[in-house]
Image (cartoon, rainbow, N blue to C red; front, top):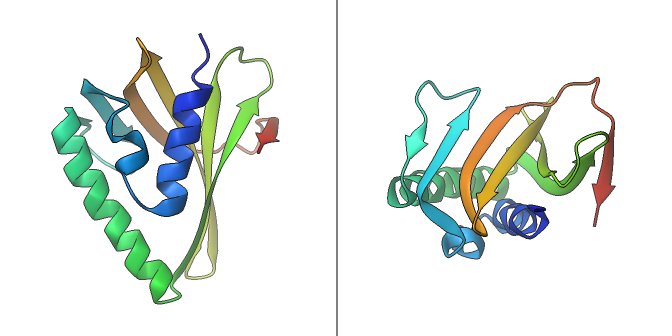
Length: 127
């Protein structure tokens, strides 16, 4: 089963800086982890609280011209039925690329994992 629908919703969340596109598509037991965060966040309401605050901080940075930010849907060659979110942003003249893996069960997002994008990956961008 493909995760494209959920990845598109997550991409919309990042680009609008608003959790509402994914709110009804999250498992109650969702787990969020990041290479930049020591502990994972577990549970729908803890995740939504954390992500709302994170997106508000990013929104403030965008309004003040401190950060540029774009999320896109990508497919990695060789990985079937799996789509990823690619986040690209510039902060303090430093460009970053992050991949987000989204796991789905029964049409609900069960986990979201952020990690640095490897320069060795071959990707295809989707609109």
